[in-house]
Length: 174
Ligand code: NI
Image (tube, rainbow, N blue to C red):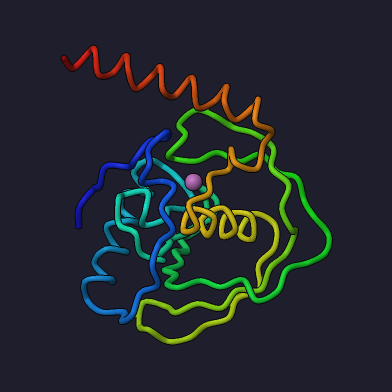
């Protein structure tokens, strides 16, 4: 297992559309374990493979509360096969947009089809925070960040701040 560096926006890699996984093999399973370890270390509740620079349709999620047992989901080639007509508004953050949060509107509930870590097809109905987190992570696989759901003005404010932060970090390390 290994902790992996997370790509911070703005970065062209975060705009890449990730490719489906052909076979869920040991390499994919090892990647998912590294992603979970990295996510728990941050801590976060979801992570997509592209955030650690791997353009494959893989996400990991765990929305269990602090006092609950861990409930990791290892999700390959996810597809939303149904979503509710009613929307929910919820404040989102992202490990690739550190320290920035904004309210995003998305369908309240979804039904998901995906492959698990054994390559078996699974279906999952999700609402509330699990639905929210899965939709956010699937967006990453399509090159979409939560700021892309905001107005252009709000988006550019957040991205400008992150750009400044990156520049100041570069200067510190120079
Ligand atoms: Ni994110």
